[in-house]
Length: 353
Image (cartoon, rainbow, N blue to C red):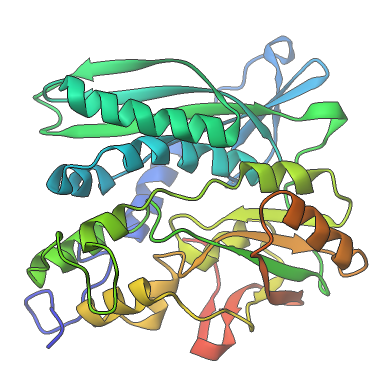
């Protein structure tokens, strides 16, 4: 029998402790109080509400900035005693968002909140950070370590990254997305760093041994779920200058609904979704989760999407292959309407939140 919340209903992300609607309401309340705009001499804000990165134009240059944490994946890292993967994730979750607006990563500052600094744990996190920085060709500029036992009882990892638009490149914000475009998906490396509160709750409820493989798995469950987030910087950088590239999307929290952030007045029809990796199917069975909950919480095997015009499709594929995205597959198209649908699963999402 699948685990339930204690009242007979199946698990959802909200019941595990992350209610997306409450997050959206709280964020709207915060933003309603932030009205200040600096004078033009301090830079001009690039209007891209709800997108992956904030941007400001300073003189002739545009700078993109994003910030994110690896969330409760650090709790799993602590349970398993592996920290390199979340160190790499700290870079990945940020540079992938920069890639989604076509920005090239330039610098990152990390933030570590902890109850007690452990040199060996920090060393392992550093190895992961270094790997992520190397893969994304990004510099570590510095960071902040705060020992705050009254605030956290373990470790919280996050970072802020900034990127730029070389050679006069314009941000890729999705305004050119139109019916007839095709959607390509680049596979993920696993769960990445999203939905871990729900994953951990399911593993705990079913008393899953993190040191043993799941049925059909080859690695211990804890190690498999901890797999570092794939970095898509090279793909975003290689395709951002391509005229046929109309939109780029990092499939992070929110699952396939992230596409709505590119253009709210078209419909993304993902009618060729590839076979979902076994890890996701196992998690779904473990918690009795609906297809809707899975596709709006996890990446379901696709970690990055590109919306491209059909005229230069072959050239797009060649660029993808040269940038390390040769495993990309066509997963859908754009048509008139609104939202995102996954017809093979009978799913339709009208918005992002």
